[in-house]
Image (spheres, rainbow, N blue to C red):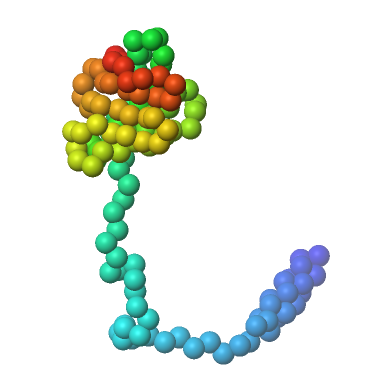
Length: 128
């Protein structure tokens, strides 16, 4: 029995050894610059990370979820806990952030309140 298994193993190894007998050329050496490496020369900027996430209750009892970004110029607003975020941005840090369809946020991640506007509701004071 052991002899039969050994013979089958040798036959399988011989069959696999004969597969794909193509010549392979491996070229090594310094980069001559013929193929430009665009990734090495690009100025890559990563998107900002979330610095803080706060839940705000506004003056009309509406709850708004805000993810404050680390660049201090952008945030994501959600009107539902699992809802899709809407991005708002400001030209400079510390200025009010605005977005599409009437979204806006004024404030910072460190403050305990912010002024938030969402579609269907005017800008109002909201507390974390």
